[in-house]
Length: 247
Ligand SMILES: C[S@@+](CC[C@H](N)C(=O)[O-])C[C@H]1O[C@@H](n2cnc3c(N)ncnc32)[C@H](O)[C@@H]1O
Image (cartoon, rainbow, N blue to C red; front, side):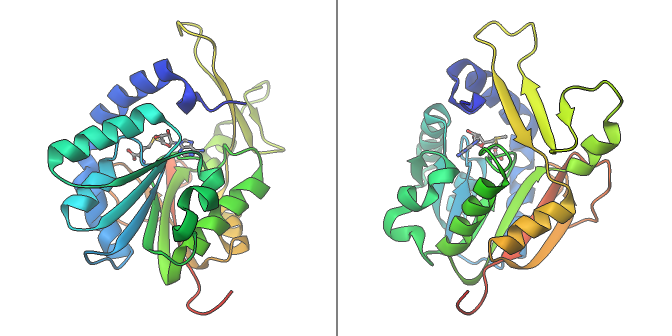
């Protein structure tokens, strides 16, 4: 199944929506990320699912060296243009986070001081939990010892709570949400099956991938503050660190 993020029409509409909803909160989010990840420039940061470069560009403005990965060529083009307008340099790699080791090449091992994955940027949509673990393991491998990943994704608890008998769009035995473009959609219908994780499962995935000191918080755009997760929060934030020694 192709990702909707590979559909040009979907991406064009999403870009407008993302700009309107999320751009204004970017600085606050980056303030939080710097503190949570213990960053000081010119540390090297990996931005997974970087989109149009919201965080990548703000981090580069603050003196960080940023590598952004995204599946969408159109969003990376926007990221490059916006970086040029802001007078900063970011490295953009096009491809799926499922292929991280080959995308990063020489930088696949212990090259980064931090990694971020903000918004629903791959986890859960890679085709099964085994692939999600493989992705997280690749991120852990790309981090220097002791360094951290901040990832935000849907809070599965909310969806379980919303489920009503007859609701065919959420298979609660598998944790799989079936998403499709609404009937008003003009182009080819788009579908995606997304695995929604409850916090305990997300913690397990991180631990299976070799992360330590896993913490889970609530998360609202523009208000990242490590607040307790509530059952009805739309998204959750997961933070984990690569081990300080060998895994
Ligand atoms: C909701 S957007 C968030 C973008 C950005 N992180 C932000 O906060 O503005 C999700 C991003 O994840 C990217 N994405 C989705 N699946 C991906 C995958 N498998 N590999 C790489 N990028 C992916 C999309 O192209 C999109 O840019």
